[in-house]
Amino acid sequence: MKTKWITPRTEIETFVPDEYVAACWGVGCNITAANAYEEHIHNPEEHRIGYCERSNNQVIYDDNEDGIADRMIETGTDGLGNLTCTIFNDPNYKNRRDISTVKVNDYIYWKTKSGSRTWHHQGTVMPASNMS
Image 1: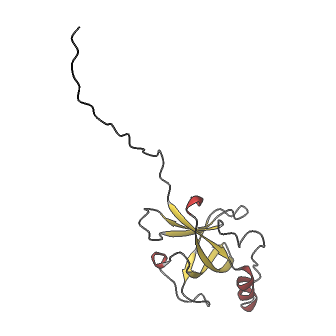
Image 2 (image 1 turned 90 degrees about the vertical axis):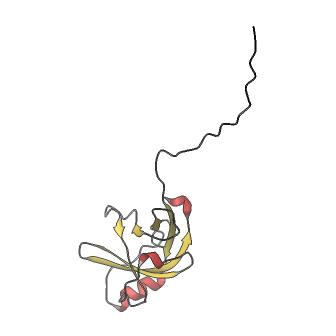
Image 3 (image 1 turned 135 degrees about the vertical axis):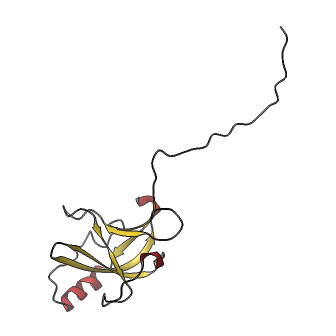
């Protein structure tokens, strides 16, 4: 039997995930400040202690992982589903802010709505890439 020399070669296998996972950041609501604002505007909606201040309940997604925020939602809302968050530049919730300008460590103001109910939130954006 005659053997043939084969040139050694390296094969690299590329990992391809079977689903896309977006990068994301979390924002815990400063419920003391948020409830003070609600009281100031005579809004009966209060932020729940033990829930709203947890940064995994308000999530900012970078859907295409380019380092730019694309959307923000509030999750796990006691049967209300995921609520879209509207971002503002100011503590009076008057001037909308483009989500693409939000970065980690920014202090932001946002509003969520469900039916006739509205909540005003505020807090600091935290890195939380393991939340998506």
